Image 1 (tube, rainbow, N blue to C red):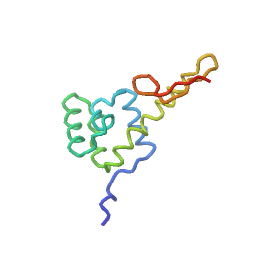
Image 2: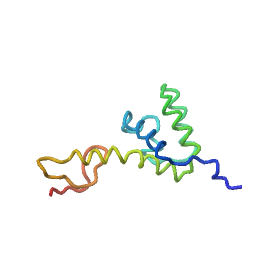
Image 3: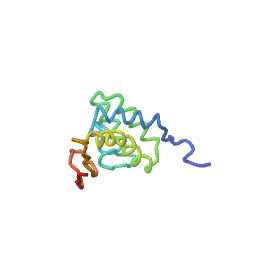
Image 4: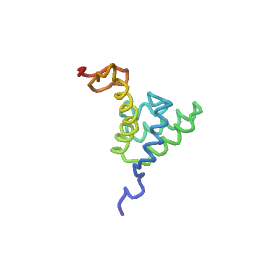
Length: 117
């Protein structure tokens, strides 16, 4: 029996749910240590469940339970997928006087490389 058959599938709807949480919690709130820091072990996710519940973050606790059902690889990908629409929108907003700021946006608003065209 394949142990991954009972794993969560990353669907667009699931990505949207994580993205909605990210929009309200730009540093990933109760899920920070997993989705922002990359600590993807079960113990880290279980900590997130408890931390979310302790702070009344019900959606964070539910998403952490979903993370527990994911593979470690999926845990590493879901946050990046959920953040992508946010950063795509951020990039689109960098058009100033018909000039586009090119580069990779970082979470603090700075760019890794900057170039104007």
